[in-house]
Image 1 (spheres, rainbow, N blue to C red):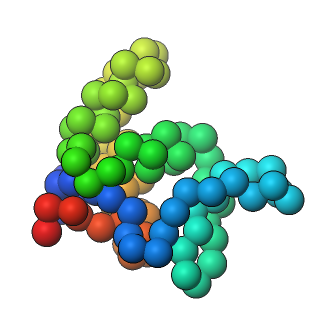
Image 2: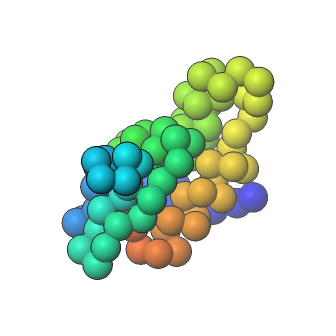
Length: 92
């Protein structure tokens, strides 16, 4: 999968948080919140505007040794969240 985002970062007004009531990680944004799983949190924590999608995939691949080639999965997740306007390209 190919994405148009080269260096992802959270959009202005978006931030990772933890919902203590529901006991789940969330992505907060001005219009609401998006519940995240652990994988999504791991990816979004690395979306700092400096790392490329390849950098993120390599870093996570070293953590999740059972599947070291995560680039397509990372790109798919970032594209899905970017479609909601919550991740943008820092290189743009």
